[in-house]
Structure formats: structure tokens, C-alpha cells
Length: 105
Image (cartoon, rainbow, N blue to C red; front, side, top):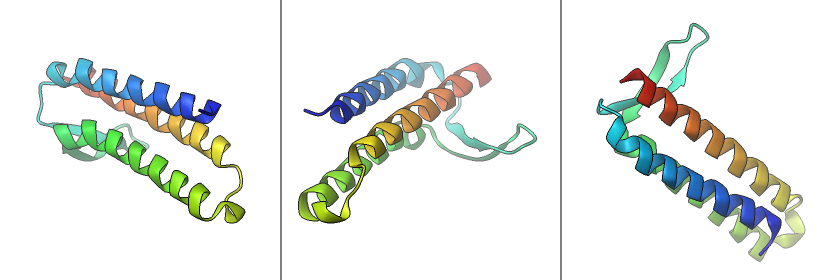
């Protein structure tokens, strides 16, 4: 198991824990997913899709990176660094969205 896989697993556990903590605390049925420069939400998503869709998205990114490194390793450069960065950025943005949704209710 590489260090990128460890970072990925930790980020995934944090996201799942964040979902389990945040889902019952978010009163509304929709969660703002992006904000404009004025600080107002530009679009939102249903609560379950917003929370668990990000976990599925992260697993999909990992699957794509694994597929590329397995079947076309000569075309893949920096997969571990890319996986680490993607894991940290996706998890951090997910935590931000969930905390903002909890605060909004």
C-alpha cells in the first residue's frame, strides 16, 4: 500500500464520518454546493446526493487512476501525487460544504 493509498483511505474515512455526523444535523433537504463571489449559493443538490455523491465521486477518481496505472502505465506520470492532491482537496471541500450546511440550518 503506497502513501497515496493511505492518504486516500484517510480522506475517505473522514468524508464518511463527516456524512454520518452531518446528515442528521442538516435540517433542509437541499445543500448548497457552490457559492458565487457575492457569498450566495449558485446551485444546490438534494442532501443525500450532495453527501454520498462526493464519496462515490472520490471512489470513481481512484478507480480511474488505478485503471490508468494498470493498463497504460507508460502514459501515467505522477499518479501518486495526483491521488494525494485529489484526496485532500475533495475531502477538504466536502468538509467545508457539510459544515456550511450544518451552520445554515
